[in-house]
Image 1 (cartoon, rainbow, N blue to C red):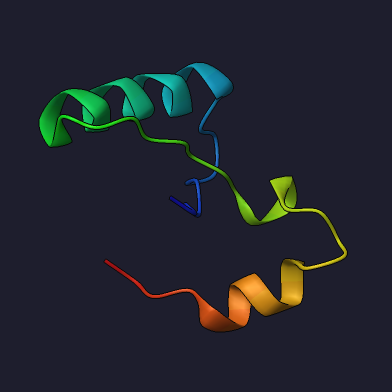
Image 2 (tube, helix red, strand yellow):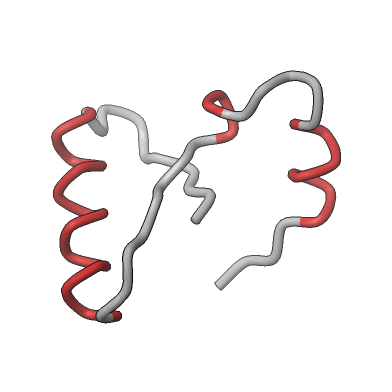
Length: 52
């Protein structure tokens, strides 16, 4: 999942969110922020992203 972290969110916050989502959804979840995406395909991913 691509997430826009709130200002002040830490890596620990994102890790907690990832674990909570795994527990709720019952599947493995990977969280990435736009800055985590490789520049090579960042624009394409952001253009195709769907809010949930």
